[in-house]
Image 1: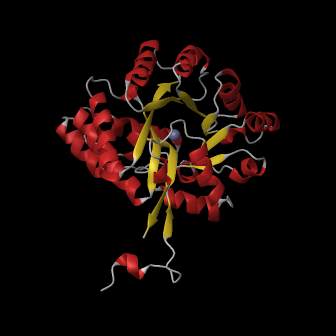
Image 2: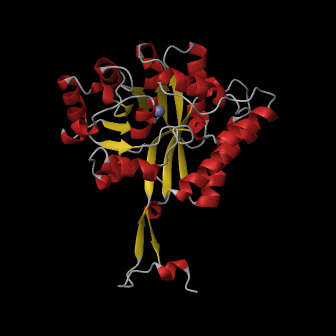
Length: 316
Ligand SMILES: [Zn+2]
C-alpha cells in the first residue's frame, strides 16, 4: 500500500505546498467544546451550561457568559487551549491571535494555565499563539485595570481587545488603551458588529485602532469608509458568526474600496465553524478573494511568529 503522501504526490513529483494560515479574531471562551464545558462545569460544582442554541446577539451572549464561567482553574484553561490547538492543527493554522476576557473569570491563578496551554500547543503542534486581553465597554474601572495588568504582565500577550455593548462609548477606556499602546501592544476593538458607523469612527479616530473586529456597521457611511481606507484599517470579519445572529453584511463593498479584510471564526465551537469553512464561505458566498484574505491575516498580525518558516510547510 502506498503511503498517503505517495498517493497524493503530484505527477510532476514537485513538492506539494500546504498553505499555512493565520487567524486574528477568535475568542478562547468561544472555542470550548460543548462536552468540555459540561465536564468542567460538573468538576467545578457549577450548573450544566446551556446548549449552543441562539439566533441573535442577546441569545449568544447569554450562552457565552454561562459557558465561559466553567473555566475556573489553570487546568481548565490549559485543557481548553490544548483542545483548540488540535482544531487549529486540523485547519493548517500555524499562528493565531486569540483573545480572552478576564472579567468572566473572577478567580485567581488561572493565568498560569494560559501560559502553560500556549507552551503545550507550541510543543505538540508547532502552532504559535499570541494573546489579546479583552477590556469591556462599560466595565468597572477595577475590572478593566485588572485586564490591562494581565496584558502587561503575561507571556505571549501582543495586544488588548475590547468587547461589550456597543451602545456604550469606549472613550473612558482611552487611557488604558494608551497605556497598552505605550507598552508596545496592539489594539483590536469590537466595533460595528451591531453598532453603526459612529462606533467604528470612535474606535479609529479616538482610540487609534488599526485593526477592528467586525467593523461592518460602517457600511452605510461613506465618510467612515473613507476613514478606514485612508488609515489602512483592517477589518477582522466573521461571516458565519454574523449569519448565526441574523446579520448580513456586504463584505464585498469593503473589499471593493480597498479595505483589507481577514476572515475568522470568532467563536468556532459555538457558531459552529472552522477557518477552512470560513474561507470557502467568503469565496463562494461573498465573492471575496481567498488569497487576499489569507495574506492580509499574516500582514495585519500584531505579533511576529518566532519561526517564519512555519508559514509554508513542504510535504515531500
Ligand atoms: Zn468577536
